Each structure stands twice: as C-alpha cells, then as structure tokens.
Length: 229
Image 1 (cartoon, rainbow, N blue to C red):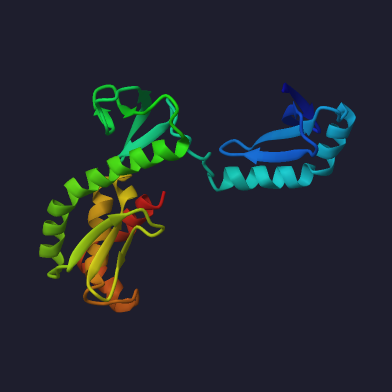
Image 2: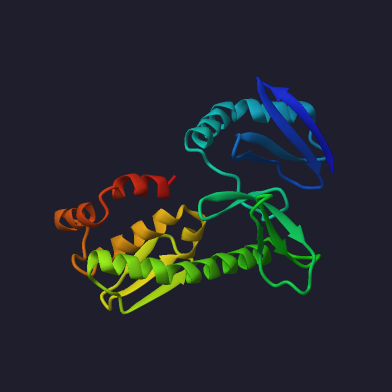
C-alpha cells in the first residue's frame, strides 16, 4: 500500500493506493477527514479529477458531520474515551487471564479492559457492555426503591439490555432499561426510571403523562436534554 496526502481544491485528501480495481471515497467523523482508496494503476490526475467532481458532495458531507457532532465509530482500543456514570475514562487494554471484567482506576481516570492478544472489536465491545450491565444491576435496586416511593407504583420486573430507547414499559408492567445508562450521570437513570414508572399510570405521552413528570421530576426536561447529548 502506498499512502500520501494531497491538497486538491483546498481539500486535504489522504490517498491510499492499493491492489484494488475501483476507487472509493470516504468522509470520516469526527473532523470530516477525506480518504480515497485508489487502484495502483490510477494516475494522480485521475484522482484529482475525481475529487474535483465530488467537491460539492464532500463539503456538504463535512458540514453535516461537524454540525451534527457525528462521532467516529468506537474501536475499543487503548486511548479511547469511555464513560461510567457521567465521568470520562481513558481505555487501557491489558493482557490478564485472571481478570474477566473491566477495572476502574478512579485516581488516574483509567478504565482497564482485560483482553486476549487477538481480541476483535466485537469481543471488546461485548466485554465492556457486560461491565456496564453489571454496573446497572448494582445501581438499579436503590434507584428503583427511591423512585417507586416517589411515583407510588411498582413494576412487575426490571430488565437491562442493549436497546435503542433509554427505557421501555410494556402492558405487563415490565420495565426495560438501556444498559448504556451506566455511561450517563446517575440522575439520568433516576429520570428514566420515573419516566417508565409514570407509564404504569398513564401509558402514552400526552398531557396527563407530562403533568405526572412535572409532579414527580420537576426538572425532567433539563435531565432529558443532558441524557441525549
């Protein structure tokens, strides 16, 4: 592979020449980096003309990434920032067969993740998610007790899993919480718990539901905004 950086039409482009048949263009978060994978036989002029033809699209894509604060996909490598209960930690991969779960160094703000030498992104993600799941399991009982006293309702069960929504409450009075709440400030877990408990009184998100939220969690709008940042 041959790698070089060029400025074309005031756009900084990283070009990687490989043994491939077609040319590929990628705009990468978080800074809108422009990368081109090109066949070895393609001339500099051909690549420049390709970038020029895509200039408007590149600028539009870069603006979208920066305006929407799009993050680069996590690779769960050493040096990445990960969060626990709203606090940032630097991830540090370690090789240790005797430790099966992530460890936190509060003083150094480091999150140690024990992995095998040939670990994959998927395996590292699963290991860290299991750590977050366990953190949630430890935190939920006290939060549930506090919030049930506030709302006056109790669920039939509380489950924790990876999901798109922060929380869910079904007709069987079962509440499901997103394990990623362990990454957020603890007040966010309380807000979501109260939100789902209110669904045991009012199942939709209408005016009655919002009045319940105003009553049981007066600053819920502020917390919701913080949760979704």
